[in-house]
Image 1 (cartoon, rainbow, N blue to C red):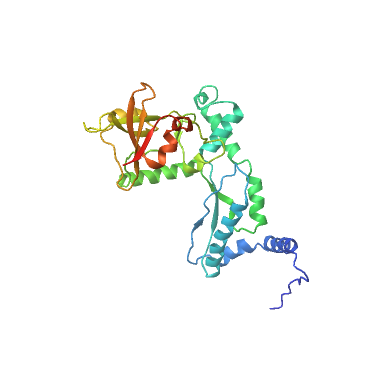
Image 2: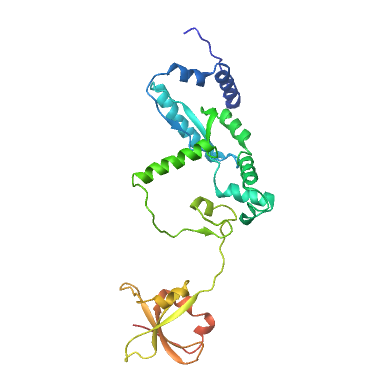
Length: 291
């Protein structure tokens, strides 16, 4: 208990941080904490890898602080906690960035540029900010093994995953199914929710829609139609039914067919009056009655 610690007369977090970091590095506190617990029960930790093609942000600091808490706690409980760093080097953003820098498209790969050269360009791009990430890791005191990280573009990593997928297939754990996914025609691939929300990846556009008339099958209500709006008019030929809701208020509107000028009666949801009839149309002769 003869160790003496520097006393701080006032709170200067920057100075304290530098002092503690210097002490940890000079005395190899992280490395020695692992040596002291060699042979103890293992607590396995692989960092959910960041991608070094983008700069680190405050959200990375927050996430890493939480990870560090668990690893330090387990270490204090006597576990051997070898924290393995990692780099996520796959993903559409990397490919699109490289294609933009090289002035190429997916169709050019293997033609104007070889696959090997394209892959090397992607590897260089994805590790662009690695030094900045390493510096942040040290500055925030995040203990993780940066010298022996797993990197997802390494052949041994890729081949390990293919092996594991093969084992899952042999055991019958894989199945083929169909689902609707956002798709990028330019990239020729489906998009994850993360990729879909990237700046410039998704934008709102105006599209042509259709209002269809469904004639009521009753002689009593001749020339009366339900009207329904659809963004997929190509599905109309296969329609077999039209649903109405028992708790929805509908209105009957005596108006005219805008194409033939013939008088007709249409039925639509009351809240949709403003959507289907413009202010100009409302000023025209029209009977409005709730059924």
